[in-house]
Length: 249
Image (cartoon, rainbow, N blue to C red; front, side, top):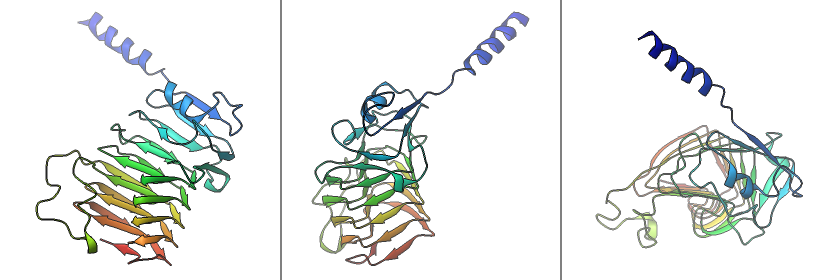
């Protein structure tokens, strides 16, 4: 019994020395890896990808896929005004679609000029559960839903579900699904546009918004659109100058 206890203690102590890696990435490609996506590709759960000041754009710096990993993507400065991902009006910023767990963090970054069918800046679907903190969503666009940010379960929501006035066909979207959880803290949504939810849209998801600002976003529910089975807690959040209803739920 004594030998067994010593062995267990040894395993615990040695495993505790395992530490996360931090990969520092520069906009000009001279960092530890040339692009953000290349850092994501080799990162392990718990690792940090730190972006230095400047604008990240081009292949490998947009359409970012976290590949289901529990990692942190953040600016070195912590100031989103000094660090941006620019989609050049044609590309989505970040796509989380592989069940990224609740420890996933995006912090202190601006998503600007990003574009997608849904979730121009960040698209979160099918159980991915990130925290998005102190970010700016500026001048992003979606042809469908959520110009800045879109969170939904695609297995439960289709283009036909969102009807004029936000109504839902009887029984629509009530199959089994894997609702995710998204936490949005201290973010600003500025000048984003979508057919619905110019700043942000969520459906069949659990979302928490605190201390955010929605300003000058446009579309049906220009600032924030919450519908179709969403569970939401909104606190300390300001809406000003948004189109449509401004906020709809």
